[in-house]
Length: 321
Image 1 (cartoon, helix red, strand yellow):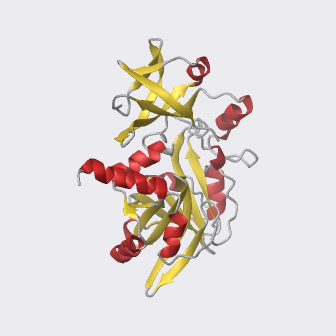
Image 2 (cartoon, rainbow, N blue to C red):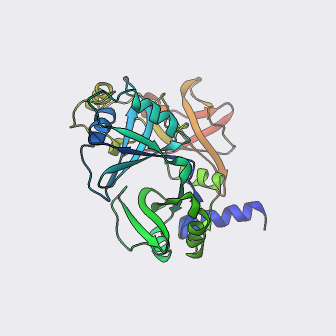
Image 3 (tube, rainbow, N blue to C red):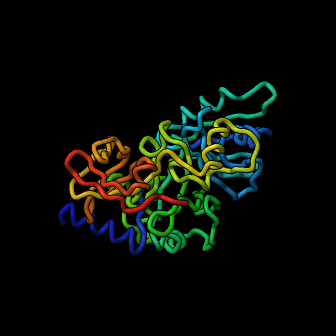
């Protein structure tokens, strides 16, 4: 088969059944100590004061002007909080958080990224596939998790941001990488490589660190409203985010794009000869070019036509909560 046929098979699986991809470049930190919830709560956008074992949530670290540092996925045990950072970013986040640990805090960080594997399962039949792999048939809320034993192997199932219907993380120790991967393959999953996953997440409108999630944007512009609490205590960047929410007017918004020609991430979007925004992600697949980008709200309101150079760019839809 040719490469394009393989890509089409992966695309069809993501749309009709489910795909398996390696997400082990995500960082994994363990927070422990009596004030672990307090510190995360005062540092990030979500209300994080306590979570019971098996529960989880997403929260965002922001700068003092409300710009994105990283999005963390938190998972609670009885005595610890596991945090997934974005790709290859655990060391940066650990060093950043430790700057805000005061003498009265009982807060400790352990980086276990190199000892952990993370696999993503995405698609309309993701739940059926992980159940076929031996995980519990339970309708987990978003970001909640369960532990499972397979003989001497311990694995963890986490409900995560969906792509084409549903999404799960399967996590385990690095020593069990091959056995865990094979167990998922045996459940009938189709493998999506890094390029295929990127196409699928762009098409699904899922923002990614270093692309849509950077210090150029605030969480509301990235459509991460669900990761922000508007009735919690103070956190770094709260004033700016609260002001933008109360005014109901964002400077720019994340949108899905398409074009007849390939697009390059980082390209300037133009409208009527003026800068209108930026392409942040782009990929080419079975149905042509797809992209994500930020477009000025004034341009969106005016309905002006967009372009990158001589290439016409169309907005598929605005990313809305």
